[in-house]
Length: 313
Image 1: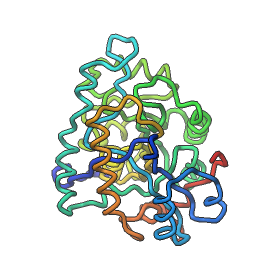
Image 2: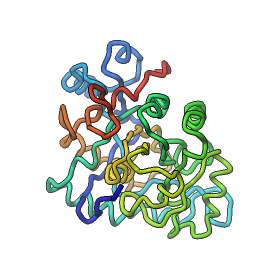
Image 3: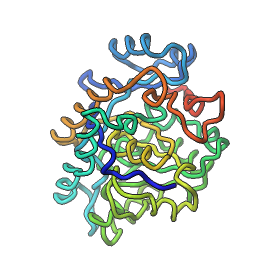
């Protein structure tokens, strides 16, 4: 599938940190059973649910994302833990993302920032339903999707869900697309990606441009399928969601589960994005997670049919 030019599409900026009473991320299938699942939510979130849910597919008030980067610079190319100074500097600026948001702020292509569905985390994703619909590969962000920021292990509650995804799609068809590890600009030898692959048990795509800009050639070459047959999962509206939507993927936005280790710039960017998304979401169509159309969503179905309650909330 041919991608849309980044220059055409401006973007959003940032979502929310967890903790301190600010964690407002939730998405449930809008049925009584899911509403009773017990996912913690704020009063404002409850009011949003009552206003906007109306029993349709997915109800979401998840937050996160932004102009500032928050992706896995977990180690330097030479090995060893901890965030490198270069990695931290790289993560604080995403020129393409800033350009995208600037255009979205004046009303252009805001639908690119709207995911097909929003979930608290990957345990809510029905991998078998996605595979049955014809999706052939899953592309993950790392930080706050599979791991805590800068961590080199899968967030323990998510380990079983990731293994289930690999079982359903095949390990070769599941990979991380990072804005640091595997990115030629930051990790030219692939040493950081190699290290994280060994630690997390999932492959990292080697590529040459940051999300949301650039093409999807590396993904198509890796998976041997069209981008319309891929699922993009990540916590960042600006990077993960916009990138996936630009390339025609099904986009799943996962709420971030920690703000630990994030810089002030990233937190400010997330706040900006969350504010923008509150204005841009609509109760139906392209601007409504759970109802956003996709070529692989069958007639009479919605993106909400790819979500299950994991019974953990």
